[in-house]
Length: 343
Length: 253
Image (tube, rainbow over all chains, first blue to last red; front, side, top):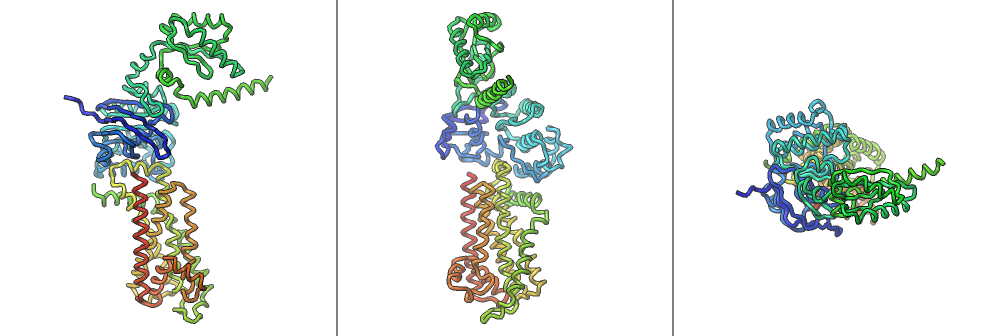
């Protein structure tokens, strides 16, 4: 017997009224019990996919089935079976956490007793029982996330959609949320999560689709994806006061190592060179010596197994955190100015 | 779950989070009391004008006070929805399996409850200031109905602006409508005593007809003007509710 799918997305397209094609012919399926990640940078279409699947916005074309219901024909049935936590939490600040969750339960059709019981259970799960009588508006960012997350669980949905559930959280809160999500999945909940954090996708998800510019560029288990990179990554940082000197040095380093027989691929980034090699441990000394022979001053060199970032880089030629890198470059420019000033 | 139950839950929430603070009513009551004092006594001698329908100016002014307070507070419903939109709670409601119109209905119900309480308070104030209704208790009930319905109709405008703009400044700025709506009417003197151009503007303003109807109930009796006002108010309400429902549907699907 073929296992029924919880989500079936076939050739999904979303073009916004302003002409932006946010989602371009995406197809994927989710089986019961899976923990799936959509990994991609800002603007890759992750949130749009979540909003379409949870019936908040309409798709342009394609076919989407959620929990066995067509999202166009039975949106209310779809909503009854899904739990959604959007990127921006949606709380009623003037209400207490307990009242807020209780009302969620009632609106999902629970009777008063069942709703009360579920509220207690979920408050316990996220460790907020002792502050449940306080107004949500007085909560910290981490607490708000936790309440928002469990508000999606009041009605025991068959699948949970989470749009960047840990964005903007401090590391401790992030770890907490990760632990709840793992626990939920262990207890049989199907989860679809979007994130721009490689680590988050890697740690939590058993299957990942990498999105870029509204398309799925590759998909598989984290291990499969990293294997696609085909080797280890040697990262060579070159520190130079002058960005153009640095760029030249990075490019020169790239051309030096590119044709070595154990080098699979090179990628020149803002302040560093990523070299994909076979058997990194054996060749790292060789590469360092070669660069020194060409008078390239290496400020830092590291060897690592491939990460999902390398997978993204391989398929798109860009770093997934491009915005952050740009910010980093600006910081560096400020720092070099300061250094000049001190002389 | 039935639609009524959904609406009921949302109304209870509205009442709980916003309504149980009596402060909600203070601005509208303050301005009403102020107008009673400022205009009610300042313009008392208008009643000596030939053709003025009553000798009690406070009674003449009562419909004005009622209707202006409805327009004054009509932004509340829009702001409640806007607050939910901006906090993300509106989306959270859209994600639940409820009929989405129950959000709009609950909001309109809360608005009508607020209008009703306001009308009761103002009429008590008027009676306390010596206004006696020529039509007795049925007249008082009729005026309450006129004022409440009028308040709900205006609340529709606030909700529509909030849904269309999703922006606090814009939702705030529709308040400027208050001035022409309330002052370009027969609020202070009967139509016949207004200058010609003002008469024209007052005749275009639907508020005038509601005002005249309520006034006749207070100072004269069940005249034909009351029927005209009833028809104008019904049409005004149906149009605004229809447009707001259409905007609500468009912005939630």
